[in-house]
Amino acid sequence: MSEALKIGELAGRLSVPVETIRYYEKEGLLPSPARTAGNYRLYDQNAVERLTFIRNCRTLGITLDEVRTLLRAKDNPDAECGSVNRLVDAHIDQINVHIAELERLKGSLLTLRTRCGPARHARDCGILNELVHEHDPRSPC
Image 1 (cartoon, helix red, strand yellow):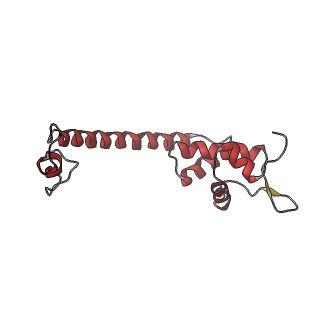
Image 2 (spheres, helix red, strand yellow):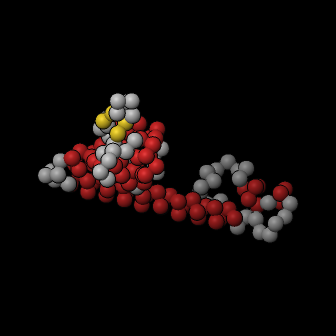
Image 3 (cartoon, one colour):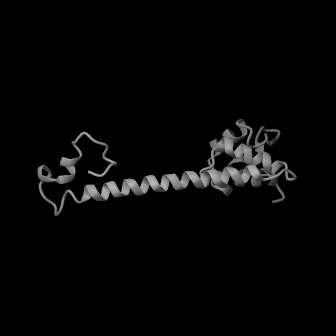
């Protein structure tokens, strides 16, 4: 890219809402861009790359504080990357916990589903009747 992009062009190119770009600037994740005489923001290739980096982090579920940590590492290329590895490892651990929770939830729903066979009247539905009991619906019925 040889010419600068206005905020709408940048937003369209990277499929990021304009409001998000402004927010990232306000939060210091993106540096303040150059401005035209008419006060339009102008973004260069560095801004495109940085916004791409941020967008990709967010797609992976990385928080804005964690994005800051990663950007600090990225902006200091001679630094050790152990903190980057630890951050990603922590996300992998969180995903494993979430998967286990979802598996338990799935098991509970499968058990609940066995409470009602073929379609009947709602008054006879084992699922509806089970859900009125005072217990955690995520635990086996």
